[in-house]
Length: 480
Image (cartoon, rainbow, N blue to C red; front, side, top):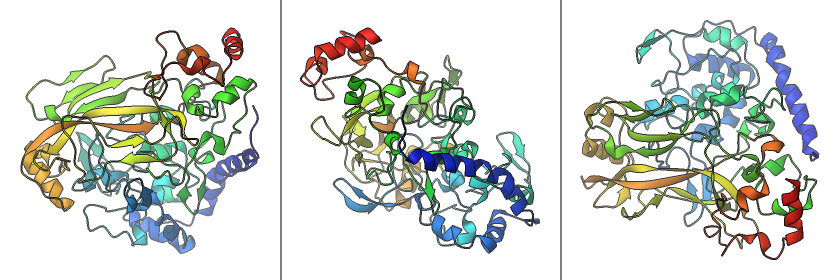
């Protein structure tokens, strides 16, 4: 396998990522403490790293609201802060729960001060002990005195001890938030979850100890704390884009037909045959059944299929992706956009088609479900779920939506029902070994192939269209 010259940079980064894990411990022995809270640690960090908070506060990891060029909308602020999804739906009015994964301290309501440098959480990314944890409803804070959560007592952590051992981020640091998007392990993405902390080679060749053993930042390179790469959902402009070819050369296969395919088929399409190969991922979430009186139920994976607070779920493992053309930008539903509740509302979707020279066929997890909408205004609703007056206490949808819509300055008619939605999540992780990559017949089968050729813009399987000779196909098939 051949690599571009960028490999030299990656190797150097890998070496630097390993050394400071030890060397930086000595550098920070003067962090004596004690520290009463997280912001006090940050103040101490800024005494030496005085420019770091300023740099970090320019990034989407801090703002959750970068300005993007969005199709049909122009330059608009759009990010995790104001998008609507079909998992836990929305951030606004649910702050202290959702913002427990913000890289800051104290975002408990809409008045959070994004200009206060002491509110930056250095430890969440740089803790090397594995002991630093944010409290689930703490608006980004860990616990400073014993506190109970779901029958378990969380004890205060030694902030000074953790601060003395900081170093370069590990996969566990990134995963502390990214593994649990949507409310639990592997709920949201399907290809980013806790099994990637120590995966075997069959699960991920890049992160396995028997493979390259990459930390996240080997691919998601960082400059001034701005991290390359983005999730397609909430990043429709494709800014800060990252692809396999950022590190790998495009024509690295030994067979010409594979290199020919790579001009219109993304690497992930063949090299990630299935996602959720270790733990199940959520594929369906129906909020309309929340609040009912019934017994909890579990599926064959041991996962809940219904809970009173959240409704009904479907989970799956070893999921075959859905495929679509994607040219690096996507469409996005905006709060207040009208819907037709008789149809499925797409909350985001990949842009691209067969005729677009920039587009390639990519694999996606398509999350489907039902969520509340305003019947008269015909818009997706923002409900207040968390808190003393939220739905999870009252089980009153009209009241919960009234509070949620008020928090985002939207009118509410008072009438709630549920509409079906879908969201698209590009699959990038869990890269399988080359020998288990898809073979020709997985897609170009007489029947039962995984590609929906009509949806991709073809009249039929293009295997015999101009550009691929029958001889080349026979040769490729024979070599399988």
